[in-house]
Length: 149
Image (cartoon, rainbow, N blue to C red):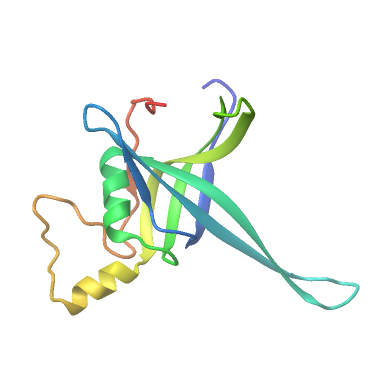
């Protein structure tokens, strides 16, 4: 072990639908914002304070396609991953920076699309796809590929 750890665990709600981007060769990445909330009482005013932190999540390949297929804005998800910061130059020449969570495992906790599909009597078999159900153990999406950007 190298003496360092880069691990993130989040439970939150999607702030938007999953957006997929495909690359040559069929690989893809999915991106979506995740909101986590903290509620506390201000001791001096006894006021209840609620704050929201936004996280930019990135999933890749089959995991990205599963997330895009089953998740939508407002759904609750458990994720594990690592923090990654990157920078690039925009078209106007300005340097841009972002910090993202590279998802390595996830579990769907509350999914609207799943509920809609159950109403349509869709079963658990989907043309060879493995469908994570609500509350199933985390899906391990780690592979040793680098993102193609």
